[in-house]
Length: 351
Image 1 (cartoon, one colour):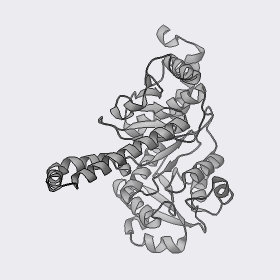
Image 2 (cartoon, one colour):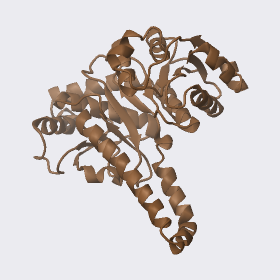
Image 3 (cartoon, one colour):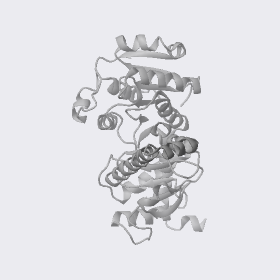
Image 4 (cartoon, one colour):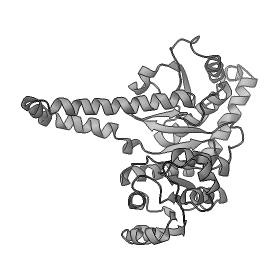
């Protein structure tokens, strides 16, 4: 991309609507003053809200969208109304090249379906994947994909996910050669489905990829910081994600209950409060906000529906990084290397 990045914002999406999306855009602008925005939504609602953010008003334009996608709306319905909804028009701006990326906190299924239909998958990618950053006990987040876009995947899909996930990690996390692992029922090479074993074989043969394929990883190791990119099908990935989120809520709720159980516990809470606040901050999804539909001819970032302004600003930041790094070009280059390495096994060793 050239010039100042412009982000298309579905200003009506999410649980909290324009008040949060515009406040998030204003915060993102404070972090990156060169940003420019196109805000899609009901002009009668967005105008007064935008007037509360003077700096954002100077860096943004409003495009009226008479409709918004409901949180429980079926993807098929959202697709049919794409020409009039804030979500559909934001994605269309990416398609037409008037925006470098789109960000929405709206209905995930509708966003995925609308983006896939409008932008199509890039050359060399069979299926797009939903990727997100997840916290670990290590010193950096991990990238996990697919998280629900594809319930069944073959080896070719998994290899493509590994390539896209590694590129995403290099751009957003800043790793030169991220460690990539396949989610499996065991760490041994012979474990798992035929698709997993075939994918592992292809990734081991891909000598010219800027990644470190470390084999299989089990679900109980996801948060240990032992891998930087976790690759799986969307069915298993979505279950793993929901399990991790539920476990985090369980632990925090259990701690709250324990600290309220007696006077001694309440005193203990006051003493340990710095540690519990650190835990809360680490598990806060706003600090890891910004799932991405990788593999499309354009950048679309999904924010948590209940994100705070800071969380929405983080999602915008992800879109900007991907646009500035030209993620599509990087993915295409790495896919070409995979095809050469698989077609010519041992090419790297001979070189």
